[in-house]
Image 1 (cartoon, rainbow, N blue to C red):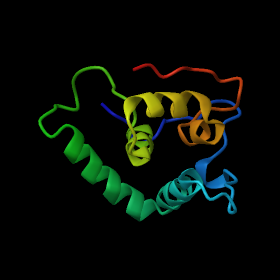
Image 2: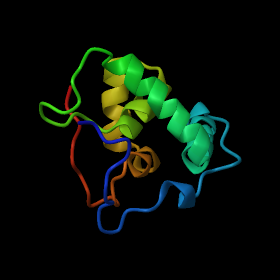
Image 3: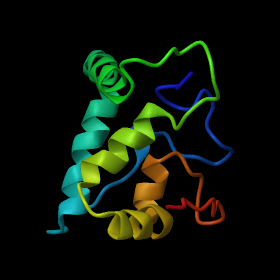
Image 4: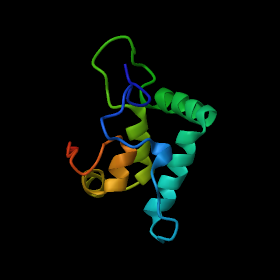
Length: 115
């Protein structure tokens, strides 16, 4: 029941390929997001990666039953951050560029992620 990526983007959401990332920042976040942007733009690589991710996440789950879970793209983005839950919680709720990668439209889209 999981979608790889949202079937439709929210009004005002920027396509991940079009997100402008800092090339001069020495923090690890822009480098990570640049890598994720490359994965997103390479359709073949993305489909192979999501097949592996889906197999790893729920190998014994019937996908035709139950409620839909979180889409695979946000799961990949959040796993890529490789941090503890408190930092992850802060980043996904407060980091605007990361929120664009998660599919949120702009600063007015304040859908919070909870623990």
